[in-house]
Length: 178
Image (cartoon, rainbow, N blue to C red; front, side, top):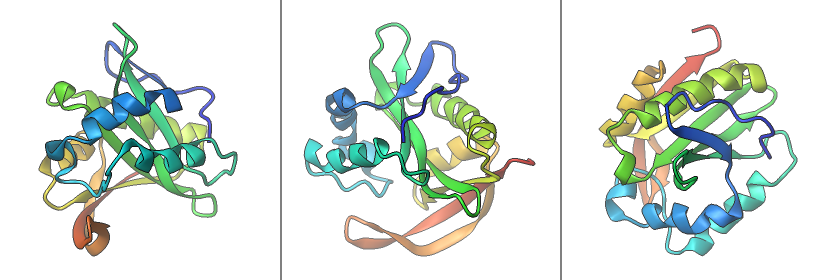
């Protein structure tokens, strides 16, 4: 689903806009790095593996996947993405997901943007709950959610396949009333 008015990123020098097919080269460039996807459920073999996601982003269905590009204000280049999947209109919930090029790790960008996008989603989409799942080995991503005011709720055993193997994921959530 196209996001008409993206939120302010919450981090100086970083803007948010709709993720576009023209971003696929830059997106795949860092998602193809083994150390970027090591602690995630991404299972990409080529840029073509990302194409079906763009069909979902372009859908007009209210429960379709939504994804924003994080871009540097200096050069307008893609440095990361953030968005929602597993959206439930009935329950007013969604799962947040994000990724960031390693050249921008450790600067607080992911936490600031995650915080801003979650807060924005409560008003923009009427979500009452936004949750995030993190592979149990992904301590960096867990810290992103904690800094973005998500609360740890538990362990989801064998929750998602991770390159052919069931993976345990930690569950974090933030409520509109938090």
